[in-house]
Length: 112
Image (cartoon, rainbow, N blue to C red; front, side):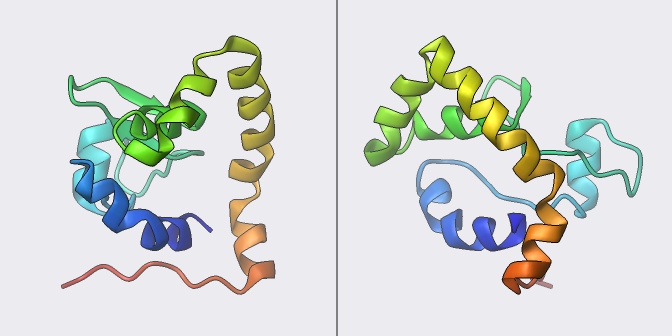
């Protein structure tokens, strides 16, 4: 599910100035301060100032830099909306492997 989403949105987020890397990439462990092979339970983002944020906050941050997604960024600034989005996102992140299997999604393949 995460890999399919990354493939779908890669061009958009790269145009906004972000680089997508797989969590299995050794750079990801270094950037996020993870042990080798350790994977976080949700999407992670290193902001332009070096802060690490995750989940819904990461999506809202990127939306700030994508012109057509900017309204999502504004909505996410409203506390009740942000909390509702976090509540909805947690079970998706927790069950992403099962969801991917049921939907028949393929994992993203790293370019060599």
